Structure formats: C-alpha cells, structure tokens
Length: 188
Ligand SMILES: [Mg+2]
Image 1 (tube, rainbow, N blue to C red):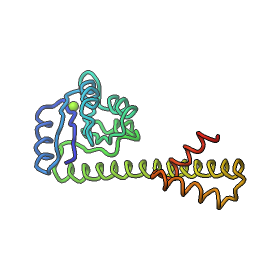
Image 2 (cartoon, rainbow, N blue to C red):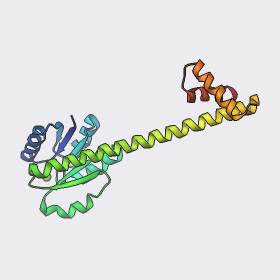
Image 3 (cartoon, helix red, strand yellow):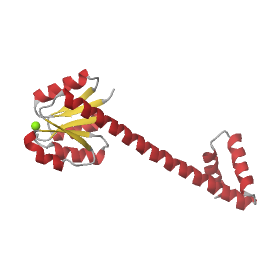
Image 4 (cartoon, helix red, strand yellow):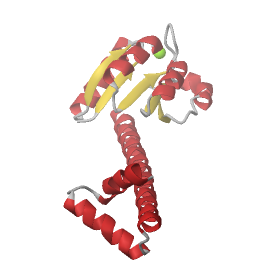
C-alpha cells in the first residue's frame, strides 16, 4: 500500500483529503499543518508521496518542498488556490510532479496522485537500472584486470587465463567477479 503525507494548514481540507485517499486504498501515514512540521515528518516516515499546500504558517509549501527535495527523492503534489496561481510558476522544482487547484475534487485528486506515484516508480526503476549497469561495468573491468594479471604473470593466453579464472571461481563456489577481485588482491 502506497503511503502519503498530507501537508495543509486548513483542518477541513486535510480531513477531506484523508477521506478521499483512504477510500481509494492509499495509506495516509502523516499529516502536517506547516512546512516545518512537514520536514520533520518526512524524516520520520519517508512517504511515497507528499501532498503539499503552498500558503501555510511558519514555512510555506514551496520552501518546504525545496528543502525536502535536497534530501529525498519523494514526489510532491502541490495544492494551490486559484488566487495563488502565480506561485505555481515558482513550484517548478524537480520533485514537484504536479499541482492541484482548490477546491479539490476526487475526480481531480485521484488521477493526479496515481500519475505522481507511477512517475516516482519509473524514476526508482530507472535509477536501479543505472545502478545495475554501472555494477555490470565494474564487474567486467574487474574480470578483465584479473585476466590481464594472469596472462602476464603466468604467461597465459587470454582464453587460458579466462578458463583458469572460471575454474577457480567454480572450485571456490564464488562468482567470477569475486574470484577476479581475489586474484587482483593476490597478484596485483
Ligand atoms: Mg493554506
């Protein structure tokens, strides 16, 4: 179940939001009435999505969004009144995925929440893919380096060096990358 934090200074709006989201099977893990509290609660709960009002006492939603965005990769959906449309321009930060104009209707809220969630999922996936690719490249480099050491120190052909590496990794029941880094430690 996806978790959401609601940041809104008007209690009645907050209640409406909680009701709409809960009915749609989202879990509202935290509620805050100002930006400062939002930052504290983000540290504590790290929700999947934050719905954030702009005009609030102590710290406004735009400032809070900026601060949260420096630390977390959590999508933020901004709530705004028609009269505050000029602020929306300022809300263009990477973590602000969309905005909703008050008064909030279910028809407007739920699709916006769904899109924000799926954007954050694909961001997470993309980051993981980049990480995996990076790891694969590192592994390949390690294997190449170990192969090179075996070739020069044992006077082996590339194929023989690779076979030796492979055999050793099977004998030791470890991955070829791990075997390669062991060889680098021994010979390098
Ligand atoms: Mg407000």
